[in-house]
Image (tube, helix red, strand yellow):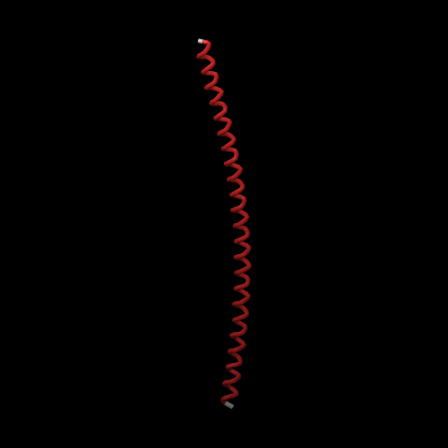
Length: 85
């Protein structure tokens, strides 16, 4: 009788542990899903930032080329005016 009672108690604990284990697994799965989603979003943001940086760098280089060209034109104008003086 005492053994049966102890057996029932242990089976009840076992069921409780099984339920807790399932809840923990579900929570772990949910956490992993959230983590994957957050990693994907972060990846998209970083990719967009890299693309924007590349666009900005291209614009800066284009502006640099224009400035160099204008500088060369001004130097040429200065040389031309020296010749005529």
